[in-house]
Length: 192
Image (cartoon, rainbow, N blue to C red):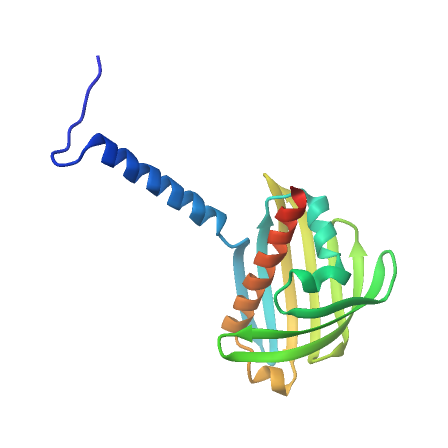
């Protein structure tokens, strides 16, 4: 025995169309979702401390390949204009990057020469040795997660005067979200 529910003034075809549209909107929303799951920015004196957790729906090897493809980062990271390996190495290298960080009407150009220490497919430690910041050190930690890879990111940043006039917790949250959305987009593209 089939039970039919009737709602006066609403046809079954119209109801199905509405449900289909809602399902499409939900799927589009999930696809456009940022890979950044959590992000916290705190101040300790002059330093900004960023702790973020991201998720990439790809294997750890793909995540690693994209995060360590330093010569090509300017192709997919929005604020990087130039990226090159200054001193090559297998597990330790020096990279140089130049770019412009933007948030609304605010922006500043930067340069960074960083020593990179790699623990393949597990961690990337980056320490600025010369550049636009007084101090910049980050640690990216990768781990397998259901359906992909979890990325734990910690950044400690002490800006110089020009950068400190622009930087804020909101600016940093925007930059992290924008960068990792683009980086994870590259990861997804490479997985295909």
